[in-house]
Image (cartoon, rainbow, N blue to C red):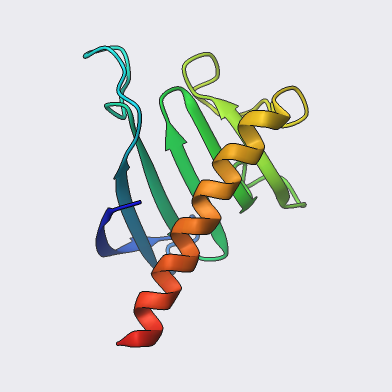
Length: 119
């Protein structure tokens, strides 16, 4: 999986600076104009969170998508078309999608860590 990596500064909800790393990798194409990710997977890391977006699906690992929550969701799968506020966790209803996206984001992160160690 070939990825272009970009690094930038982000801010947490509390305004504390954090590093955010993103990458985009080619995937299976979707019809133009129907897939906001262009048929690609978009990966990112923010603090302790890992995330991936593909089409309407967004998977976040170790995330607090709603800052009023006291507990972190170990795995949160959202259909951002149907639920743009990402309030409904669909992980239990779509285990195959969770497995596929989690494998992809962990592979991306492992590759990123290997590149960082080599430098």
